[in-house]
Length: 418
Ligand code: SF4
Ligand code: SF4
Image (cartoon, rainbow, N blue to C red; front, side, top):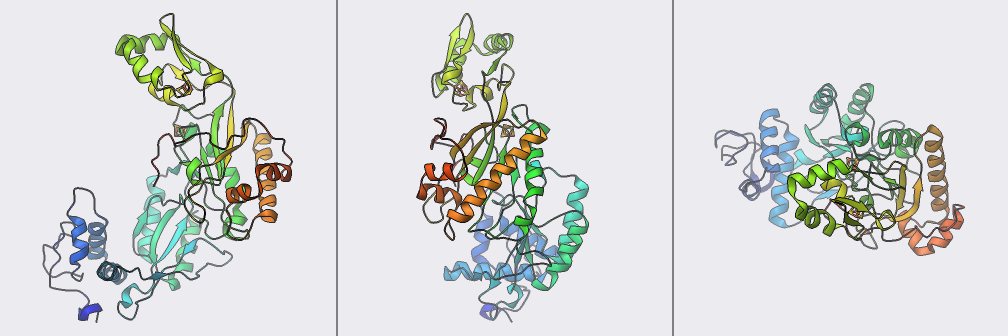
C-alpha cells in the first residue's frame, strides 16, 4: 500500500505525453502535481522518469516519483544523508535515505554513485554502452552527464548493490569520483584535443593531477573539499574561475598573433564598421586600434578577455609564449557567499614533464599550508581571505607580485551565474 492509500501501480491512468501508456493500465501511480511539469515546451525530467519506469518496471523509480509528488504537496524535502562506501574507499557515493520510507517504502534508498569523467569529457560509444548496461543491471538507469561536480552521476541505487556495481564498473576501467573533505573530481575542457585556443595541454595536466591526488580523492583527509578545473584558455569553458578552488587557466605572455591578410579578408566580408562596432569597441581596455587598413593591438593593455579572438578566430590567435595562470578561491555560496578566484600565480610554463612536476609540488605546498592554517569546513579561498594574502604567500614561500590581482574579471566570459 502506498501513500494516500494508493496501490502500487494504477489504472487511474498516466496523462503524460512521454511514457506512451495513453492512460491505460500503468505501472505508475497518479502524480497530478508532477504532470504539470510536462506541459512546457522544454524537455521534462518527469517524462523521462516515467518512460524509464514504465520500460524497466523498477519499483524504486515509481517510489521516487511518488515521494516527489508527496514533497510537492507538503512543500517539504524528505531525503537525508548517511554513509555508504565500497572497500578501500571513503568517498564517491552520495547517500539518499528517505525520511518517509514507512509511507513510500519503494523509495527507501536512492544513493548516487559519482564516477570520474574522462579528461575533456569525451567517451567512446562502447564505453558509454558498458556503463549504461552495468547501471541498468544494478541501479535505476538514471544518469546525469555531467553533474555540477563534473562527475558522471549514476543516480538511484540501494546500499546492498553498491559494492557489486562498483566492482563491475572498476573492472571496466571506471573509478569513483570525490566527495567529502578531500580532493574532488577534476574537470577539463577538450583543450588541444579539438580547440585552437588551447594554450597548454590541459588534458595531460588533468590526468597527471588525477593520478597524483588519487589517494586524496578516495580517502578524504582535509579541512574541507578542494576542486581543480583545467581550462585551456581564458574563455574558461569549464567555469573554473567560479567553480573551483584551484582554477588552472591557459594564457599567454606575449602579443596576440595577428594575421593581417585574414584581418583584411574579414573586413572585405563584413566591412570596417563591423570591425569597429563588433570588435574594437567591445575591447574592455580599448587595446585595439585601426592602423593602415588593418588592426593593431597594444599588448600592454590587453587583459586577455578573449573577445577579439572569439570574434575573429581566423585572423587572431593567442601569443606564442604560452602557459597557465592559477587562480584560487572560486566557489559557490556556502558560508561567506559566492567568490570568483583571485589570480595567485600569474604565469607558469606548462610544456614539459618538469613543468608538470613543478606545478604538482606547488599544489602540495599550498595544500600543506591550508591543512595547517585552515579551519574545519573552510575552503582554501576563505582561509586566504581570513589570514591575508601576505601570510599565504609567506606560507608557500612565494614573493608578492603586482600581477596577483584579486579581481581579474567582474564577470565570467561565457557562463552566467547560477
Ligand atoms: Fe577551447 Fe578555451 Fe574553451 Fe578550452 S576553454 S574549449 S581551450 S575555448
Ligand atoms: Fe582587448 Fe580582450 Fe582582445 Fe585583449 S583579448 S585585445 S582585452 S578584446
